[in-house]
Image (cartoon, rainbow, N blue to C red; front, side, top):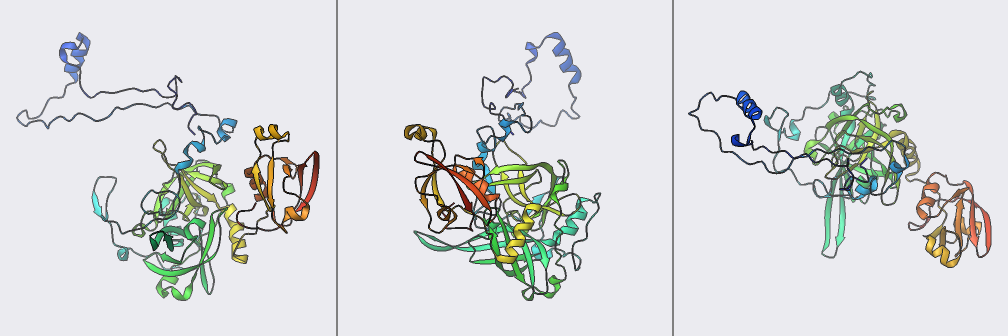
Length: 469
């Protein structure tokens, strides 16, 4: 995490600039020791008749950075201020494809790549094989066979690769200029196959708003898909494909991935990301890193997620793909990355133990029933509290008829001070506490009404209108 004083010129050890120059000191300016060293270390030229290439002045200044590190678990590291993740809030990129390579949350057009060339680590330029040249995985049935802890990255790629698919989202966009189709790209993980359907886990932001969905299995087999359900709070979705729509030669290659146990992960464990970055031409791309951190809290616009952090490359289009641990089991669903000019290698995945109960409920009901209080509220600041001589809390602006709050007797104008024994002062805090409760839970809500302090018993009901909490 970057220090709050990173850009403070008065902080002596925040940044140390050490400029370098490539231009040698003139000989007449050298002392005797420097001149002797320069002559002794000079490299003779093999053929003086061959002219030297023209000298090109290097562009830019090189410097060394020393960044202070905060102790893990300190209060400063939790704060979402300028020195924490909040500083880079604008750089949190949901990694489905969005109109290009690196736009933010949402979707974008995925035009074919103009140049299908790449340069390998030895500097050799090669042509990327067309998708119909991809060699399919060996035909197999049943679940992916668990691997040993000592498996290789190639073993993981070969075992889990057939379980990862591409998902293309076509949606109809309406603007002042008219309607047009927009295409987004993400990834998904096959987790269940029955006699009729193939079920796939992905991200909610990959499938939300789709007019049509298309799943591409390995080997360029494109099949229409339907949304079983999705949950925007946890960013999890389930998609289904009819087996009858899948070519017979592909059906035999389909293997559900094994969903592992992220509680067994340790920082430093192997992490392998598999998905479709940038374009379908790069389906089943494998990138490798380590588990950089566990239970990392990331704040988005309307939610907080506790995620697995990894330095395995996660790029646009990887959303919904697999993060695989050292045993070859899926330990997370890739979702976002942190983007900033000063940041490299910070991707995040939803822990698979958080995914499992959401998927189970989506498979059963198609949605996630979440408790709501049933109010519209505003945060009462200290200044307003002092002006009106009332404690800081949540001012109830409106109570929705028939909701939990209405039944319990919460009134417009009440100021909520406590929820289930915990002091709260903002709607954000109320949302967090509600996410930890279930429909039907009984809680106590303490309010101020005029000169009275009341404690009301509330039985939490299911989700109300979208704008209501």
